[in-house]
Image (cartoon, rainbow, N blue to C red; front, side):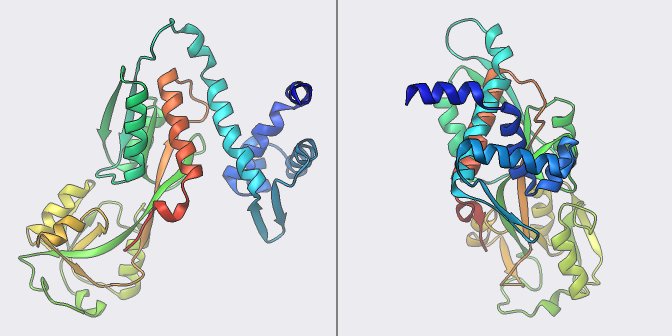
Length: 318
């Protein structure tokens, strides 16, 4: 068995593993080819060679279907960890013996509420207490700019459109509901029809538009024919909530984030009560960036958590 393992290490084409990772990340051979600047037959051939080498089916695919097999998912998880380790080797060689130190800059959209993210950070701090972190809060567009400019090692934000130099993993999904404050005339009124909101003054995020990250929220307003004036906007959740509580109008907020405000009587849930708009929140990073070892380890742990925790547990429902 040991001899077989050594033989595998020496015979494997590491480019096949990288190609396989991109196929899984892009959810298709054609998209992977575009990402890698390779023709689709070249990508398909690389996948076949890897499946022969691994002696198992890694991806089920045809013209209308794409699915990663359990074996393929296990290989992908190991590849992510492996490539993160390899990418950190130059920095690791520069470090002196002793406990891991370093500093990590993380940029986040306002009021990211994700329990498993907190668990990963807590575990990382327990294992590497000498590593320091800086968390900066910005708009989602500013978060992506910070990652691109290397002002942040990685970010957590909503995604308006993909930047070709960045990688995106869905960290969690949140549902947006409409809410009003205690000063609003609809506060405390139960079982309202959605039409009751059509003429009401509106408060929202600057990205609440069809070309913005909150386009599902904007689409609902458009479909329902909302005509009330927009009386307040902000890029930050706390400020949108402040305007809603102050009675400027009703507006959208992540349901799981404001549960305590509803229980405390500061906010009141408005329709729709079922099938609210959903928004994906992403872990964003530059796959080609050089990282210090602390950054590489934390990013690896976050990505491993994403791949191992079922999406149902990262989907915060209404």
